[in-house]
Image (cartoon, protein in one colour):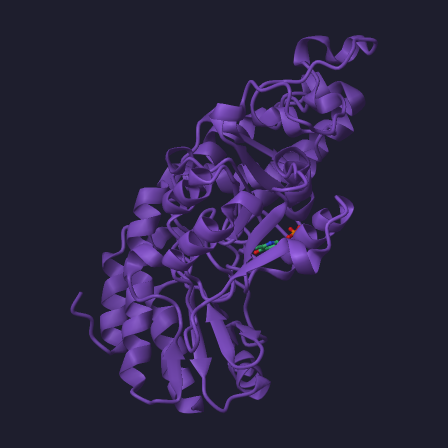
Length: 420
Ligand SMILES: *Cc1c(COP(=O)(O)O)cnc(C)c1O
């Protein structure tokens, strides 16, 4: 792209953007003088779609009107409510409907998936994660190791960037697995790294792991609604992601879970049980022996929180209307413009650590600022620019194609330049 560094040009890109109308479907937070914030933290908490209030109100109204009968009488009956989310969620991550369910929260789901897919033996018991894994994933994995009587120091293998580099090199993962594969039970990798924004080749990770009989799981928290991951094709065994980041479903909202079709009918996998993964047909007979449901639904435990699911439904309807392909196309252009403008600042004080190849990143850019401290982040915030600071010196910024504009990006970089 031949971008130009001017406000007029940014506005021209917005005018030509066929998805620009979507911004108006969201509540954009404002300052005291009614100016829109420049919101770059959709990777942390996505903004609220305006229609979400109606979706939740519908369930409140039906609860008021029908009480328990809402399970059957509500406009969107609560009994099968989670099923209303499945097809659209599956499309977003490139999965088949039988492979996806929405339930619980992310870390909880990682544990439930490890109950089934981390089956250590005396010889094959180690887990590989990225050295910069999200803390919750690291704690989850360490606690699973301990739970199975493995010393986490000994059982955890970290896939690290090379000396002096920030990004992971997949050849190094291959080498780790080639050398230690007989001892490795599980690879649990962030599909898009939360810190660097690097998007890894999921298919290649699956091939590397499976070549040595290791189970492969992916945390897609920073991928779902951001990149187009093609989970089914990738061949990974399982994945999980939250819905409050790029999927705009509200603070602490539920998680998506993927179990590959090849495991859908395996009733012998160890797993925890509750009434919601028991056969739908006989669930309410209440006196049946446990009969697990096929597919991802077979990992549910409880009847789900409808109010939170209503917010997810609202968001998924928006995603479905637009489609991930169109969003991705805009996203590459928007982030490309962001990258161009940052490079135009032309100072050796800043460095983008996110890959510059669009196929190897989503919308987020992680910008390292030499000799900066948190006061820079504070100054940005005082100027209505909402970003995320990671110690020691990185600003994470995610221009989200659903609601960020080219003008947002232009204004942000102009201010960053002034502050530097
Ligand atoms: C956001 C995020 C989490 C948060 O997990 P919750 O259980 O939803 O609190 C975990 N892992 C990764 C990689 C994340 O990005």
